[in-house]
Length: 207
Figure 1 (cartoon, rainbow, N blue to C red):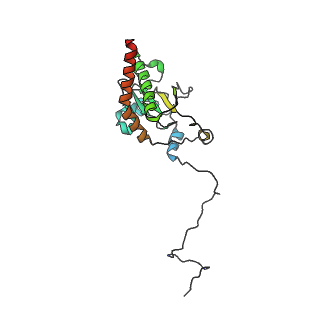
Figure 2: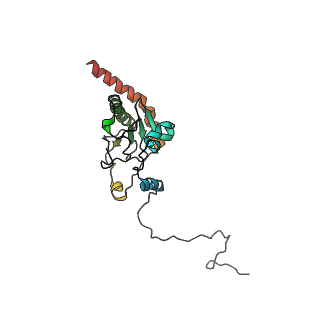
């Protein structure tokens, strides 16, 4: 019977057996953020959403808030977290109606659209203390709109130093909170921020 020594082969079952198989590649100093879930979005893009039936902004209000990431429902518009946020707390203000252009809003819709944008800023200041914001609507495919068929306004909180080399070089954003956590924080803070905004507006009108 063959005996094993310290220099000899180890047999299957021995405690010292290890698998030293290595895949192709040379280790380097870089870390990898694997985001395979984005591939469907990258391949399909957002331009495929042209009809009410498959528009995410039309479908979202038909589902539960937790499932759709909705933080507030108004009379004519609602507020939802961006599924692909630039920063934590990236919100979208959307009308319920499937309209593509800012000029398609009615007077009532325009008023609430602006009101929800202001409240979104108040809420984000309360829960995340950003030092700035980016607000904007990309109109039409050539204007950079992702889902061009359904109007939506971006409310992006900003902090000093939040822009780094990742988005520029690697097309990657590091997000520090889960969407579920952010949705809960924003939704819970919304009523108080909304009341504060209405009180401020009432005081201004009384002057």
